[in-house]
Length: 297
Ligand code: ADP
Ligand code: ASP
Ligand code: MG
Image (cartoon, rainbow, N blue to C red):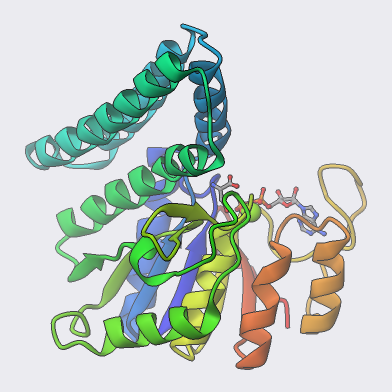
């Protein structure tokens, strides 16, 4: 098993998702693959703003929902063959209706709990993973969508939940050894989302989809974790800030951990510990220039 995680920019448009489909189609020729995806770029921020606006009694929340809906419906229309769009369009509308119902409640209550905020921000990954799963199904790939909330178990520290690794690894292992689940070439999983002991949705911290990938990889002793993003590796500094930032061809887990703690956003700090424990190689790859490989461990 291999784990490929695609970040927000890699799934940010139908065009980018088409690149993801090509990369994953290559991977599954070699071994079964878990694909973990972030929300489409900007959507988690929009959902946060949405929850805050609705709970502050600001009618503008309705426009935010419309924008989120439009972005996802446009993506489905551009991505799927026309005859296969209707089920996914309905699914997107159904999820948007749920978001709307939650926001109407917030608008009336004028109060936003951290639990409710996590529920609302989790919809970004649910939407992107469902749409991409439908795109793989339309290509005839033998794939299954996994609900990461059911297998990744955390405490109730909403927005920055702490993973119960022992329980989570057991749950993931049990899931993948069940005969009804272990026969697929591809598993599509939302990143970032998890749940607590009561079954409430929790989230793993901003940037947490990298961590979701690492958790699946460590639980299943995957052959590799690939973080697909918009840069070709870890660099000496943030390329958006420092013009002459250099790519680091290879780096130890320890050094990568230090860099990420000091702000290298390309990898979310908690990601490295689970993969280091199992000695799983981590690669940082560029979705938009897929031939360049850079290894981070
Ligand atoms: P994704 O949505 O794929 O998770 P992120 O925006 O979270 O992507 O992370 C990728 C970004 O991290 C890059 O576009 C880059 O600007 C930034 N970044 C910051 N520090 C570094 C670094 N040291 N090396 C590489 N990228 C970095
Ligand atoms: N969508 C979440 C965020 O924007 C998680 C992630 O992208 O890794 O923080
Ligand atoms: Mg990230």
